[in-house]
Amino acid sequence: MMRNILIRFGIAGIFLYETILSLLTPPYSINLILKQILFIGARSVVVIVIAGLFVGMVVALQFYDTLVRFGSVSLLGSAVGLSLIRELGPVLTALMVIGRSGSAMCAEIGIMRIDNQIDALECMAIDPHRYLISPKIVASILCVPILTAIFIVVGIFGGYFVGVIIFDLSAGSYFQNMNDTVLNRDLCMGLIKSIVFGFLIVWISCEKGFNLHLDKSGTYGSEGVSRITTEAVVLSSIAILFSDYLLSALIL
Amino acid sequence: MVKSNSENVLEVFELNTWYGNRKILSDINLNVSRNEIMVIMGHSGSGKSTLLRYILGLEKIKNGVIKLLDKEISKLNKSELYKLRKRIGVAFQSGALFSSMTVGENIELPLYENTDLDKATIQIMSRIKLELMQLSGTESLMPSELSGGMLKRAGLARAVIMDPELLFFDEPSAGLDPITSAHLDNLILQLRDALNMSIIVVTHELESAFKIADKITVLDKGKIILTGDKEKIKKSNDPRIINMLARRAITDPVDKEDYLNRLTKKL
Image (cartoon, rainbow over the protein chains, first blue to last red):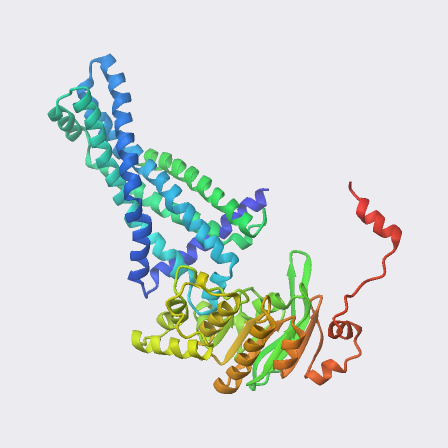
């Protein structure tokens, strides 16, 4: 059991090494990166906006209910802003990206593996790490922070809707408190987290699909693709939550 | 010390491979000369495709030597291996075309990635190869819109787009009707004659093998049982080859008690 886990880590480590090596070696294909930005970033905007709006609204609702007991409803803007910027924005955006893009990347690469398309790339002297994985890593590292920013901004306006429109708080107090409490350090924390999450999502999802043939624990065909896709989603989600704690502990 | 001949495009010496504790290939020795069509035959599970994967450098060699176009592949680093692979072409059994690209984009891909040629030249080269494969007009179709035979021919067009010195073709006839299969056989012969390629075909189709081969290697249970020209194969006294040529199933004598024991074991 332990030996198998160590072997899996070794395989994932080699995959990461090969990918970083291909990232550092030109030529770079802008077209491939743009294609992935469209897939990971642009096509996720709608779902991120919807999720951000409702998360912002529910966070404001919950904080309002708590703060009103202590007579501190004026702090609603700070509470919504800080929780979205530091934690909820990066984590929930990453989880949405895993569900929308991470699972698709894993299944796509897994199918390419079982249909010999990755071997075909190798045989055409095209490095599959450079052609398939690197553009996804670059796109994800660029897009996840932007999607996180969209999530946070929309979430803040969701909180504004609940606090100011529904509960009649002053708009000035909502934004002024947020402005006073949110520091550059909080913004940096959100940014660093989203970059790390963007990287982790692609690493785990693509590695699972890419090394499907090395996975001795199950079947290889369509059932294998379905199994590794589920594993990729579960593992990426756990990795996001674990690294979220680690990063928070390091930065705070 | 391994003796090699520079007229050979492929040389395999004493290749042994394992999957876990199970031996897959035993003492494989093989030579393919320039401009020759070598057919590797054997029934399903005999190790043909595994041998192909080792020859292509898709699996790491632990025991034995493989020299491809005069280079010992286990001694090459990644960039040297890619440089060597630019001189070979591989057509996979399923075609292995990228489903998100059109047929034209699939065929042009090696040229875009490995050369500095301009778009117009690449498109002309792609059309020449599609014409050769009788696939003109399919450039803008998606792979899902092609039949099985067309997919194989499109895969073959991609494999020869860089005009390789050595072409590998995995199971050209598998799953095809006799007419399409015969058409692919003719294409393989044309490629050898028109483009001076050396070709290695992995197949279990007897008719196709005897039509195209200059030399045939027969594999059984991971071992080469015979290599030679068509006449040598036809005249062989080896019962495994006689059975293969007669398309007879090989049945081991079964002990009744043994058989029942195996069926009921661990129930």
